[in-house]
Image (tube, rainbow, N blue to C red):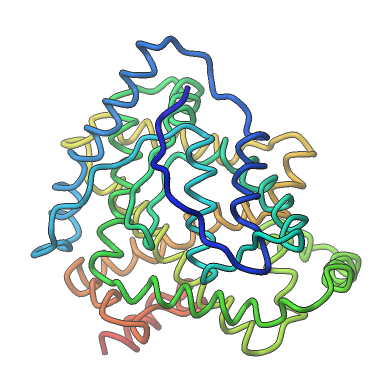
Length: 348
């Protein structure tokens, strides 16, 4: 299925050629599930409508979004479209670090392969830099078929999650700059030869034993690198992980908290979806997931939702919303696992 993309110029820089990465990823992305033209058109229309319908319940439940302008319509894309948009977003995040010269091609090849793999897993994404909400139609169809859940309910449920991200960044635009700053700090050692970087990762992996193997699976390469980073880079990584955990956990809380009045099958969808997350994939996929930090993403949903559930249960949504007031109100990684500590520090 092909969904039109806008002709936007891709940023150029020196470290990774993101334009090249987008081309590689688009070529390597696997086709989505088979469907007729009519079915494809129907999915696109229903997802776009579901994104519009999700806006009001998200605003009502969270208490966020008052006074903000109506958002742009969601863009429904295929896997190739997501790869292209993700490459642009990554270039934005890294300050236009890309490259039209041959020096950026090897890293662009690797980045493109990564985007191709992820393109079959992402259901939707909000890009805070372009302020666009993307919904990946073939992946939504693949998952709802696998789960055997009501399609209208599942599509709205997915949109509730992604629209929550849009509302989060509209309420707290400082988060986009925090992401850029942390990314710049993480890339402070970008001049290190790739061979040395890989050597450090291999050394850390070799030394992991017992419970540390589980840690590697949960945190991916970023978690392994933390042990060899400078203090500044460790702090930057922690801020990124804490922010990601908060955002994903809050969105998961919202998509469930709206209840059956909005999504009648919400309970059965959540059970089926969580069972799918826990299912083991084949060994090759497990290695790739660990290396890309996909399992870390899954852990973010679990830990983040538990944090939000606990805080909202104890102090209510209005008090919880202090978290969007500025960087100092954001929970630390330690506070994610200790909500009372965040309540005591931020709410007094």
